[in-house]
Image (tube, rainbow, N blue to C red; front, top):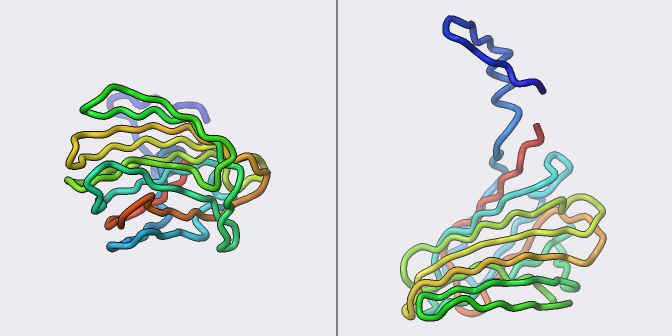
Length: 187
């Protein structure tokens, strides 16, 4: 689509407005709430409508030290529990950055969750509904009794398949908050 330039005195038509509103940005798909639970899931949020997705996990846990959560892709309500590979960079307020690599594990570690204030994890998932290997990345930060924490992961799910949802679980403790799913609009 060619970008139209408007000048002072130009008329912005309904067609122009609709074209620009429909050709970019994130589109809300769904959300779920979790209250003091160790896990949750969202089914039927990935489809052929969008190629790439953003998931926001916003809430808090009852852990006094920072811990991650895990994610598994789902197809027809069944978790895919094999062939997750990821690299992580962890940074704490008390110590500098550390790195980790995990190969062929049953789930992808995501985010950082603690007990003080709200935490946020942002996950970008690439092509989960295409019959190819899905990749995704996430970043998260939190406050826990021991201080501030930040983590970033880069993931490869080494299975060629299509997925329509995902499963989320705390590594330890319980979570209270909301999970939002958005599609990246194809322009």
